[in-house]
Image 1: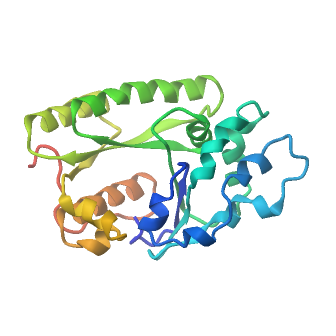
Image 2: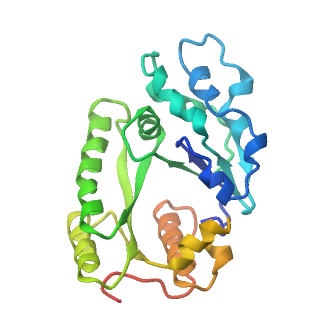
Image 3: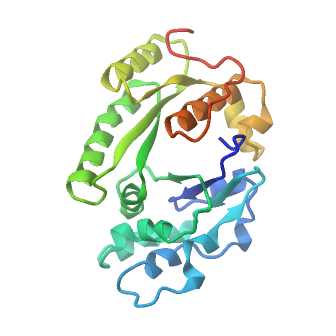
Length: 252
């Protein structure tokens, strides 16, 4: 998506700095990232401007893509669980930002802790990458129930699953059956593009490069460009410009 004209931000709700290193962010020089959670609580009479979430944004080596990277400090956020309004701290912080990015992607940990709840409260919709094997696909039902709970509990009454993208796809029967089952269960939510298994994707992380930089003509880059095209089309941001031949389930 970084090669589109939109300006994007990746908000990392994980106690890890991996994305920062991947995107060549100056991790050691950025401010502490836990302060926004405290500053956004109603218990704070006057949130400190120093703790505004925009102050944690860092430019990356990718044009048009900024990151608010996580750190180990975020592991302490669950200690604030009893604070009034803490579940919607991220939502309030993002709401006060000036219009700066066209898209904000919030990466979540694989559990339903306070960080994930904040992300669900702040998001317009959920984007779900699913590996194409049975165990990963089963988790979709659990996620669907979590989204329903977020709506019913008024944490985020308008939250929906916006898109599902199948990843690590290969030609095995298990992968094909998995995609077919997901398409049957989520006919309007599944993207047409499936991201094929590729060793180049792992290599890109090792060399701290995006797949578009590391192997621009490889199937990983082709597939993710197609995913970006489908998403910006769904979001009404621009007309998609497909490059190369991406994989769609049933075609390969």
